[in-house]
Length: 123
Image 1 (cartoon, rainbow, N blue to C red):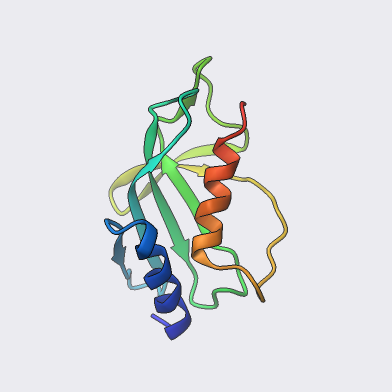
Image 2 (image 1 turned 60 degrees about the vertical axis):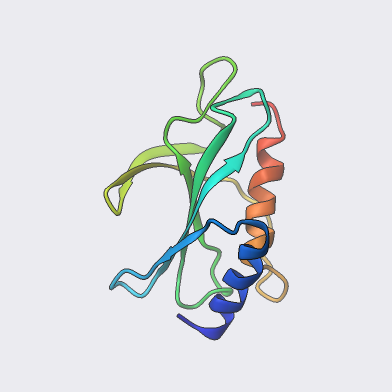
């Protein structure tokens, strides 16, 4: 793990003390947040999050996933959802949400906060 990724994880841990880290043999770092709270128009109202961080972070935006069971009030997946994806023996839903990624200012904390803000929208 690079010092930059470690520093970002340390910052993220300030808000999500229960996060866990694994380092698969492919060089990525997997950051799991077990309990991200969602607005009440999502079911369930909390989900797990997985960030897959490439070794060249922050030059590349991490892939991010949520629990495959997340649905809106109408029973639909969030816009941009894909999957399920099996990662480390768990089922995840990928999310293709586009926003500008500026390697000079982005952090893992900012990415998780962007995911939270995106779930504030009604799909």
